Image (cartoon, rainbow, N blue to C red; front, side, top):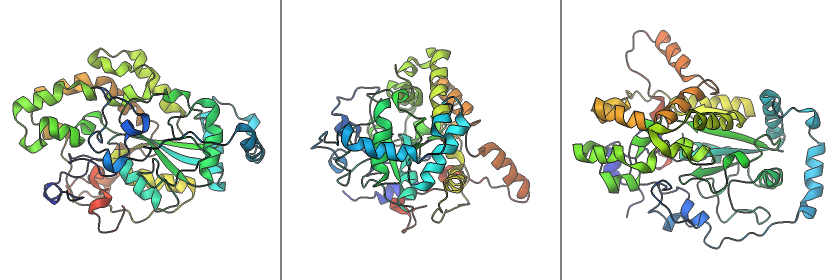
Length: 382
């Protein structure tokens, strides 16, 4: 019953956000409770069996101010935005510039679209050091304002109002999606001048190997898995194209290796609308760059841990098995590779610089593991 499984921690099996399996995430937000959904094979979350400590919204209400009550405040905020009416919604850079300016002025909310196991716990822990965030994993909690409905994501016409109201209380919130969003993410007004959106992208096979309480119960710990368990893990339908099935409105990624090019393009279209994309491969540098853009200082970053990165192929230890998983998640892999071109920090270029600057050192800095879970960090969030 211990909050931290020390044995798993000693074995390096606790950091679920980044690269290694764990026994469940104690502060994960419960999608099942928030949506009151019956989870199926493609809609599970890693906190499926962790409902007790994630019971944020058991007494969920939909109390909120009327449009009339909030109308004057929204109008006032809008009037304070320079040249808002002259912004072309197809001009990504102009939209981003306005969103960034408004965040710095306290007029825009920072929102992380957290695909489960994409470093959301680390991101939340960092943002808690900067300013107010919701109490429960940055997703919600007892301190949630009554003027804002508790559902997520938002529809287009409620995005401005909700972002304005939440910015009065928090500088940052997170939406975790372990299950498929009940409202398509494309419905949100991502071009709102009151919203700065961020998504952290991750190699889909690394994400598969992150593990969680559900995966461990089904297939056992990675290092002790039999060949039969590995193939059952590989054939499991619940994680096929995990990103695309959450980013697209029609779950098109669930077709596995038969997923269409059109599905991939739909995912790309949504990513283009976000203010920022970060790559978990160099998350510390990404967060530093984000801090520079938004005008705040980060807490201590635990860089250069001295660990050597082990690739997903090496961890699986079977080329045939690895290629099978890759084929089933090919579109997710293509989406991740494509997203690197929009990432705030180019991790590949960064790695080349590190090698150039450190010719005498053959160790590879494992940026995936530079961020430790807050549970094992002796008080340092990062």
